[in-house]
Length: 403
Image 1 (tube, rainbow, N blue to C red):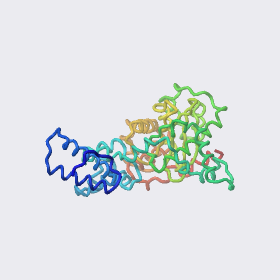
Image 2: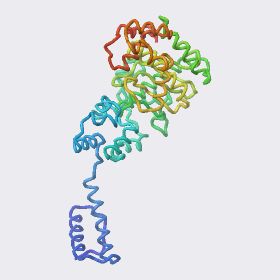
Image 3: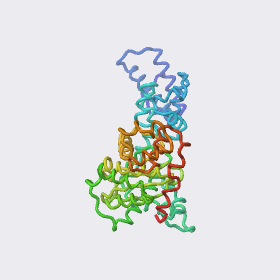
Image 4: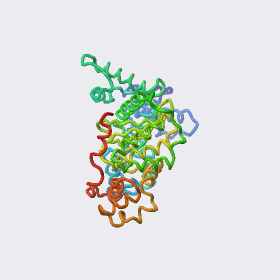
């Protein structure tokens, strides 16, 4: 007997009863527009809705989808370099150590036939929808306390410590009532597991910048140009070059903060702007080498000059890895050409016949430190065991011990 009314299915017994009625209706092959046809459609919808609630379809994991397609097509990691750019990037993405970027998603979607929705990941979409919810326990509270960024006592509970972190983050302009993380983080240093840690580090950078606000002149955006950056590069020949360069930038109204990265993050530097319009360059000095210092400092200065125009954005840099971001490419070009113009590099003896003598001679010709030439050779050749005596190991942090 076929029912004339239908209700939302709430029990398994009701589900099987409706299922039997659907089978009975199908066997009768009702004509479209009849009551039986409409009832068949209604019962089918109710059954489908019940099945989805009882056994929801989980969205595929983006990495699992890539691995499945690789297995299906018999592909190796080397075959994915065309979509990721480098072998190391393929390994890091498949190991879930590096997130997929928009260019990667586009290339994979076209090349492997995986939908962009799957590669983006519904989980990430849901996280963005729920971005106003902050799990304060995910901040590196213990390390923040150990470093003296926030003060608490052993008697206080974890919950009270989290409240202190909340106040700390909010006071630095990184969180408001209507937007969980007001600033938009970008750069290759960001992963899903480091977002909270990076916000904590940024809050500390902003805090230290504000401590020096009274002694800092007002920033004039017209001051930073090619000529200023070229002037900065010449300081690299001085034994006190790192300190002189930082002081020169500070004199232009730009805050320069030396703050080591927190555990678990791969970070060389950052460029940002405080809510009062003060540009901030932050350096971690994770590599105590002159070649790394000079390139990172100039790279971040290029970001301040060309890209950071609002307090709502931060660029975080892991310069050990290449990036698909056009802003990173521009900052890299400015930093490279400021020290070693492209027109001279490829025809130089340092490039064609690299040796200690050719590196030193070329650096004298350009009036820059030999570490910069040696560092560029090491980076471009991928051989980081050569010219280790020229890159200035241990020659940076000593200039900033008081900071």
